[in-house]
Length: 369
Image (cartoon, rainbow, N blue to C red):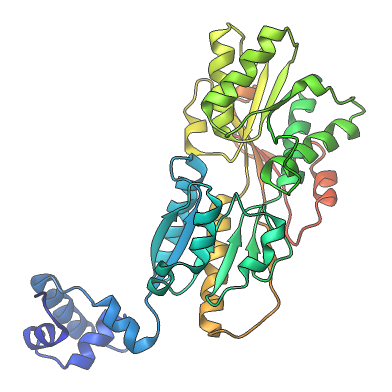
C-alpha cells in the first residue's frame, strides 16, 4: 500500500491535521513546518487519495472536458489550455473524446463517468438547437461551441460571424476581389454551426464591399481537415475557376489549401492570398506561414473553467445562464503578405464587424507576426 497521512505525519513529527493543511496549501503553516512535511511527502512518495477526499468533501477536484476529437489541432490545443486553466485552480481534467457521435455526446451528459467529476465542459458537434433541453442536467455544465444557443447553461463561444467578416475584409484590403471560401456547410445543415456563422461573415463582408457573391467560389469541405481543403482547391483548379484569395474556415483546411496551391505552382501570396481560422500553432510554421483568425482560444478556456468553478461552488443553486465571447484578432502572416513588424493596427472594417455581431464582448485587431 502507498504512504498515508499517518505515515507522513509520523515522518515529519507533526499532527495529521498539519499534514492535511500543507496538502491543501492552507496559508497559516510555518515555513519550517511546511518544508518538513513536504520533504516527508517526497521521501514517502505520498499521493492524496482523491476518492476518499471526495467522499468527505463531496467534491473530486476533477472537471470533465468532452470534445469531438483530439486529432483536430484546435481541440487538442483547447484541451491543453483547459488543463492549464484548471491547474491554476488546483483542479485536474478528465478528457472524453466523443468523435462527434450523437450517442456518445448524449452519454457524456448522463453517463457513468459523471460521478468522477465535479462538473463538465461540453463541446458538441452532432447535437443541435433542438437538443437544448438535453443540457438541463444535474451536474454543473458549461457549453462550448456554436451548435446550441439560448440553452439552460452557461455558454462560452466565439465571435464567429464578425471575426470571419474581419478576415475577409483583411483580404479585401489587399485588393483581392475573387475570394474563395473553403469549408462551407452542406446544404442540408440548417442548424447553427461554426460553418454557417463564418459563411454569414463572409457574405456580410462581400455585401458591404459591393462585391457580388459567386456561388462557384463557395466550396463544401467535410470534415474540416487538410485532405478536404486540398481537394476543394484542386477541384476549383480543374474546373478553371479563377480566384485571387482563399478564406479557409479553419486552419487545417488552410494547410490543405496551401499544399494544393503549391502543387499547382501557384504562388502564395503573390497569386493567391490565404487566411485560415483558429490560429493553431502549426499555422506559424507552414511555408509560407499562414495568416489566421485568433478567436481567443486561451481566453475561452479560462472563462469556461472559471464559470464552471463558480457553478460548482453554487451547489445546485439556479441562476440565469450566461454567455461569454472573448475578443478576437486577425493575425497576419506571410500567406497574406505580412512581414515581421512590431505593433498592431485595427482591421479594416472591424468596427462595423463588431457592431454586426450581437455579443457581450467584442474586439478585433490585426497583428503582423
